[in-house]
Amino acid sequence: MKTTLTPAAQSTVLRAFGEELHLHLTSEQTDGRFALFTELTPPGGGPPPHWHDNEDECFHVLEGTVSFLADGRWVDAKPGDTVLAPRGQVHTFRNNTDRTTRMLIQATPGGFERFFAEAAAEFARPGGPDMARAVEIAKAHGIHFAPA
Image (cartoon, rainbow, N blue to C red; front, side, top):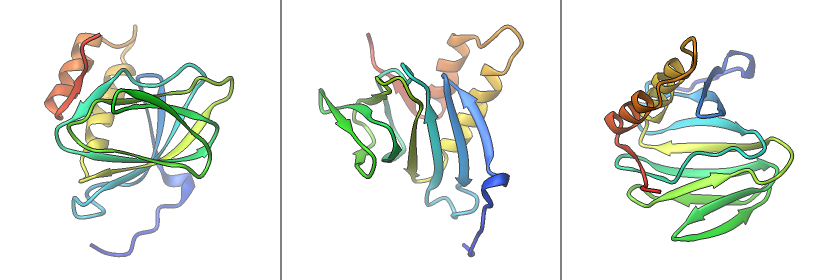
């Protein structure tokens, strides 16, 4: 691994599941150790409850209040707060406010960005995504949506 600078203007931007991800460091840049990105979540946004087979996720709130579901309960995280979602545990987050929230997220080990890039390609299809295909993409990357 070598010292790497990713200028903000050169961050890759991916959009899927109503989220906007600004990729700062990829697993290729960190020898597979982690991926680092900023995620913007619009009002009412957030993924469905899910778990990861492969990654631990660390969320650091930069702007807004983000509601997290972890260990079966909801908690609100404000700017400066950090939430750890270990692999294998059902979790989600939701923006219950009227302003876009912004979080710095580290996924360890790296690889989550490959899932999100494939999902973004599906969401960019003319006519919108095939959600069954989006679920298949997630499953292929060890991400599972909890039953409703």
